[in-house]
Image (cartoon, rainbow, N blue to C red):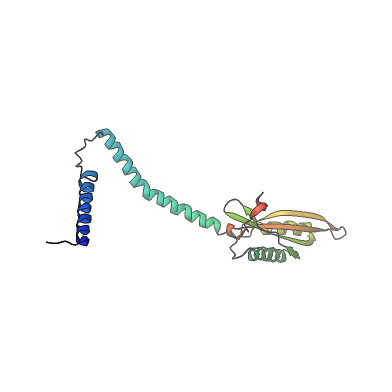
Length: 195
């Protein structure tokens, strides 16, 4: 039988491939049967491990219940945070609150300045609004007391009082009221402003 050069070359490559597979199979990747390994653990160690596993199994639902309870408490506390889609809307809500409370206490609140929101801790921000008004001192006290009854987390950030009219016993007041907002409303400073 006459083999062409092409057939001879194919047979040589087939033989080399079979030899390579055989060397890899039986030499490099041979099956090594693992014998039975004697346990080095003693019975007391196994009992301790079993106790730890049982405690972990029992504490799993307890941890989940704790997480659920803490999440409910956080939601209860955060209901007082001013919820607004934008920083400007949060500040407008603060201004509306000041004007509504002022109107109920007989104080005519004028103007409104809106400083930039600033961070308050790691998870919240602080929105502030500054207003001016003239009133008598008892109206100011009643106004500040009424602000503390508001459901939102608002507080007086700054207050300046000066004499307005000694005859009518009125004072000029510049009040800055701050409220807690979600952190995502606070603008992020980039670049050299961080230093």
